[in-house]
Image (cartoon, rainbow, N blue to C red):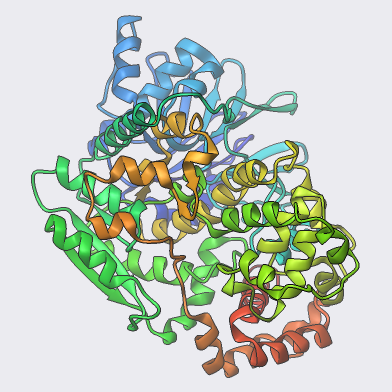
Amino acid sequence: MCGIAGIAWDDRQLARRMARLVQHRGPDSSGTYNDRHCTLAHQRLAIIDLSERAKQPMTGEDRTVWVAFVGEIYNWKDLRQKLETAGHRFNSDSDTETIVHGYEQHGDGIFRMLEGDFALAIYDAKKKKLTLARDRVGVKPLYYAFVKGRLAFASEIKALLAVPGVKREVNSMVFDRYLMLRYPFGRETMFDGINRVLPGEMIVHDCASRRTSRKRYWSIAWQPEEKSEPVMVAELRKALKESVERQLMSDVPLGAYLSGGIDSGSVVSLMSRISDSPVKTFSVGFGSEDSDELKHARLVSDYWGTDHKEIIISKDTIKLLPEIIWHTDEPIADPAMIPVYVLSREAKKDVTVVLTGDGGDELFAGYEQYKFLRLAQRARKIPGLRGVMRAGLALTNPKLLNSVFRYAGALGSRGTERARRLLATDNPAEQYLAITAISEASDRSALAGVRQTAENDVKAHFTNGNVIDDALKFEFEVQLPENMLMKSDKMIMAHAVEPRVPLLDAKVIDVARRIPFSWKLRGRTEKYIFRKAIAPWVPKETVKRKKQRFYVPIDHWLKESAPVLDRVFSPSMMRHGLLDRHAVQKIRDNYRQAPLFYARQLWTLLTFQLWYERFIL
């Protein structure tokens, strides 16, 4: 999958220093290109065409276009055939070379033609133009900053921090977003002055004039179609088969991560149908039937006879958090990073590529919040209910509250308060945040005194007036790339393993965007049409199994980690002044009373403190 870095000026030594900071992403070889206006550096993880001919940065016949590329292009053979017909000559069997000649033929238009997971930099030496681009969905990360008007970029933020003039300061607006949803989102990162290339976006920098422009080359168009259910199931089934088949391309060993759910189960099932030998599968658990999905993963493994390995995670792995946070660059307070990190470390012993089930929940409405929102929509139609909620009065019929939140155990002791807020407001974004926010505005004000309102940043994405449609759109365009996919990419690539996401293949997305929401969530059945499509391939028990979030037992871990908490929230660590000591202590006290709910807030603060210690102090 590789790692890249570069600067819009001539400094080969600096570019190599930046690249070494992302060497874990590509330990097989390195390469550099530079002229008076630009320097590109590349760290290679060899996947396709293992020969020296596929080394990067790569150029074409006239040596004026140079590419530093991370990822895989799954339609590269089709593109190559067309380019060869147009007269281009290829020197390797690498998908990277398709980008080089594609740019020579089509210019920036090549990005719309690429179907794959990528982050890349193209330098046009004739025009002195440096172009950055990130794949449609945002599977691969790419960051940039400006130093005296000149562009610097890298696969990971830590490489940009090696550039003289790039600051190490907290962006207070993004800090507020992080406290609200436990991950940074938007163009700006947690580092003031460092930005991310957004999914489906290109950044064009003139190295001579130092002028920069940006534009979206792709965005998803949700356009439900009126087709019969059998026709849509057939289209989805075909797309799933084709996506898995083409994402099996590799010149190195590959396998799959297998949980107990239908997403990874469907991927492993399709891999097994296509592969001539048993698929290597990897699962992770926590040593308890109540807190892991190993028995459900074994069901699929036994069904297809995979070469299966299980890794057990103990509470002691909390000590890996500083190491993990170094790889994330920004604080992402998803405790699932720990098992993914450990699982990837073990998988590296057997494979270099893994397929995962990421993306299925966002495309096919797999999360429980969609059920909550729909139940709330129905409850809000009861005459007089919203007036009762706005007045803050107790519900006269507590059964209604239980009905609205019968799936919402995670809300814990604050469920009633959140239910009132959900049912009282007419604003779709506020309804969504009543369910998903880790910390509310009042909590964050007491905790960090933040004046910006992260809620407004979410509201900007809720524009259709239908809360369920907007929630699905927000989670696909924001939560998926900046939380779920970053967790996956950075934890897996930390061990030089390439993750692939066939459920986010262009073919699958094209079908999913045309499926009406009512076919995704039908009654109490989430992913209804997805289940219909995969039914012939997976065990019946897997198809019928209800959605279960990947649960990491941090509420129990933190009970036994008092020394860690004491150190992290000690006076020396709190001297940054960004967190109110009394508000932090209140969260710790509340955790002892309601660990299931407050563990998430405490984990968010713990992750931030460790990040601050590693990157800012």
